[in-house]
Length: 232
Image 1 (tube, rainbow, N blue to C red):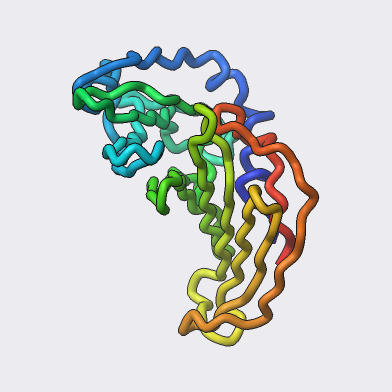
Image 2: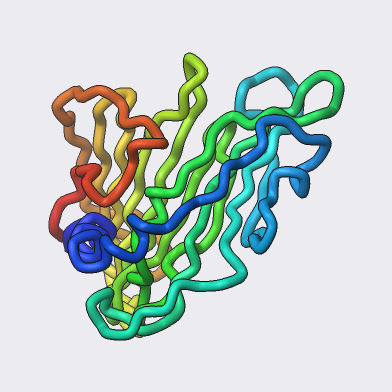
């Protein structure tokens, strides 16, 4: 299976450019006392999580917000007539005076329209792994692909430092090769690949070295960002 996120987002970007490209995302204020101070009018919180992203022993916050009013598609050019809610990832760094400062925002990584199972919302959740922020999506149909992207703050910029693909067939998760995993570390340029049985026991493990490339900034990560997942 290929990187479903890249394929579907590329197609949707070509077919749905007019709606999202003309959409005016609100400007997020730079400083606030709590996360609600950063939420624009007519937007709502979809998911939130805390973690120490800049290693200063203070709890920072990441928030995904979406519009209360969706974009509606009149045809099936985006593979779905389901309402599409534009989203913004907001990352806030806690200050010593207990206020929060805006670190960054990102919109491109959510794509242009719904590309999950049966044309539904693909975004699942955000998560924290040590000092990195993970963003998880679910794609596919009978063939499912859970995609996770991990970003880290370094030199005052957020970069993509890791990606994971967890693939399986819905309703067919028995046997030696029930699940297929790929994990990429963009800092070391290493990729791990392995299968798992229904009890999540690993087999067919392989590690390869990728060509070293500059890390992708979060603000630039979109459907054109090539992630070297392979076919299964």
